[in-house]
Structures are given as C-alpha cells and as structure tokens.
Image (cartoon, rainbow, N blue to C red; front, side):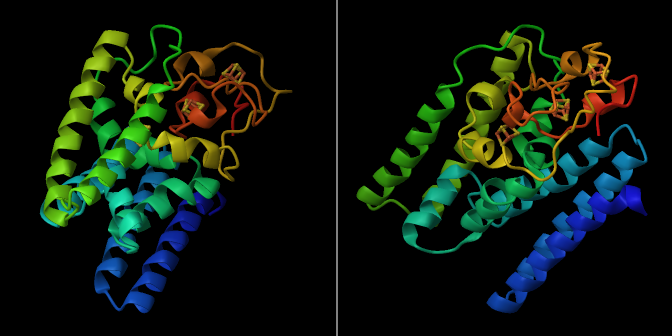
Length: 272
Ligand code: SF4
Ligand code: SF4
Ligand code: SF4
C-alpha cells in the first residue's frame, strides 16, 4: 500500500473538500464535482505508479476536458483567470474563486504545479504536439506572463466600469480566451520547438502557481550521493528544471509540473 500513499492522500483531500463544500453549501454539485476530480486524479496516480504509459494523459483528458467542456461550455462557468477576477471583485465565492483557491493558490503548497502536469486543459492539447523536449535554451521573455496577468485584471475592471460584467459576457470571454490560448500556445510551440513554451512565457496563472509551489510538500527530490551527473533528467525535462540538484532554489525549481519524466530516465534511481 505504501506506493499508493500519494493516490490515497489526494483522494482523501478531494473527498474532504467535496463533503465540506456539500455540507456548508447544501449543493450536491460540489460533492459530485470534487469527488469525480479526486477519483480521476487518484486513479491516474495508481496508473502512474503501475507505470502505465498514458497515466498522465488519462488524468489530463478525464479532468481537463470535464472542466473545459462540462463546467466551461455546458455550465457556462468561466474557469479562466478572468472568471476568478470577476467573482473576486463581485465578492462572491463562485466556481472561479474556488477553482483558483484549490488548484492554483493554496493547493500548490501541497501538490506544487500538479495542476500543470495533470489537469490543465490548455496543456492537455499542447502536450500532444511533437516538441516534448525543449530543443533550444530557455528564452528571457518570461516577463510577458506578468503583462498578461495585469491585462486580464484590467479587462475585468473595464467590464465592471462599463456595466458589462455579467455571466453572459464572461462566457463569451471564456470561449474567446481559450481559442486565443490554444492558437498562441500552438504557434509558440511550433516556432520555438517546445510544447510548453506557452506555459513558460505567457500563461498568467503561473504568477500564482510559481511562488506557492516553491514551498510544495510534493516535489521531486534528488539523492545527490546516488546521482552520477549523467544529465539525462535535465535533458528530458520539458520545463528545464535543474532536477539533479536537490535544493528548492535549483534553477527553474518553480517550473516543475511533476510529470515524472525525469524519474523514468534516471539510471541509478536517484530521483524520488
Ligand atoms: S502554465 Fe498555464 S497553460 Fe501551462 S499547464 Fe500551467 S496553467 Fe496550464
Ligand atoms: S521532468 Fe521532472 S523536474 Fe521536469 S517537470 Fe517533470 S517532474 Fe519536474
Ligand atoms: S538522471 Fe539520475 S543520475 Fe543522471 S543526472 Fe539525473 S539524477 Fe543524476
């Protein structure tokens, strides 16, 4: 059972959230929603421990497409950052605020950027492109994410100012935002030969994710005494993390998406 402890921990965590929100709000939706997500993530972790090749993709598609299609397009909840700003500025703890609080602001203290590796519906598509290992050194235009972050807030403030901040506008913004993210993400991936270029330079959500994941309980640890410095882990890492250094301050430490690719290639099992 020891090898399934992360799966059990994640399942219990999501069930605790599901039951607490159900009991406090009286809405069965919260019970079903968070139970479904927790079960998919736990199954994905079990599949990963069992070394099934597509375990990560299983979670990406079962949870990512559920959030995008069911919550976003069918239930018309804006689950992007604009939805978060909208609910926050309205003073209402809606789906957008809960989603951000759990997956992107406080959750990363426990599971780092697991969201990025296993759930995000943008990366779910970008990861299908053929540029899985970055072909070139990292660029220096990471500052763009802060501009996009500020623009997303400014956009919602403008909607409030012009009296257009309502759920219908937010829904159209969600559709347009996703089309834009996919288009920019795919173009950048092709141009820079890097599936995760959008995550590295553009995505505004990383402004929340990066500082919180620095303190993450779940992280890839390196036994530096075992490591033979072959460099295979750094070479395969899609996020350019200096994972053969155990420090939390290692290069690109807060970029780790917990995809586990580095662990699979380590010849001496130095990564845990
Ligand atoms: S960085 Fe942004 S786009 Fe990339 S996986 Fe994370 S949340 Fe998704
Ligand atoms: S390859 Fe390893 S260090 Fe790189 S993102 Fe995946 S889990 Fe993190
Ligand atoms: S793959 Fe393993 S042995 Fe090679 S550098 Fe990484 S941690 Fe060290």
